Structure formats: structure tokens, C-alpha cells
Image (cartoon, rainbow, N blue to C red; front, side):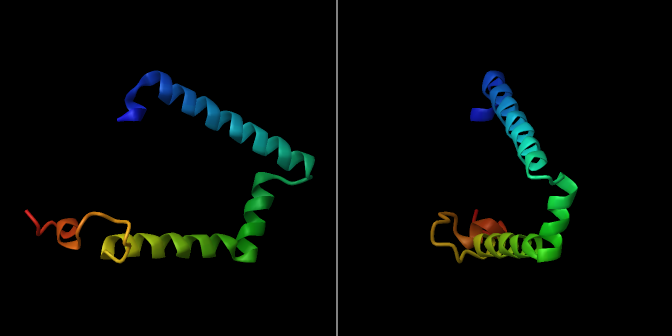
Length: 81
């Protein structure tokens, strides 16, 4: 697996850390906080919409409705041996 190599894993961790720092700086420039942004997403319903979309995608993948999924439904259930 690609992420088992320590140098790649460390690079990804540093990149994500940098992204987080830049996000916080941009929020401060706009006069917002992470908590305020989260509260706005909850009040507007965006968080709930994203959660529901994620559940729909997961359900489609498990039920075999996703045509891009190459694993048959019987194998996902563990009955195809």
C-alpha cells in the first residue's frame, strides 16, 4: 500500500497540517472562527445535506446499484466463495 512508506505518510501529514493552518488563517482574515463556521453550516442545513448524501452514496455502493463498483453484491454479502 502506498501509505505504508513512512516518507510519503509524513509528507501527507505535513501537507494536511499546512492546509489546516492556511484554513484557520483565512477564517481569521474573514473574521470567522472554526466554531462559527461549523455553527453556520449546521444552521443552514448544509452539514445535514452532506451527511445524507454520504449515506446515499454508501447505500448505493453496498446495494450494488453503483455501476462503477466492480464487486458483485453476493461477494459483498459474503455468500460468493
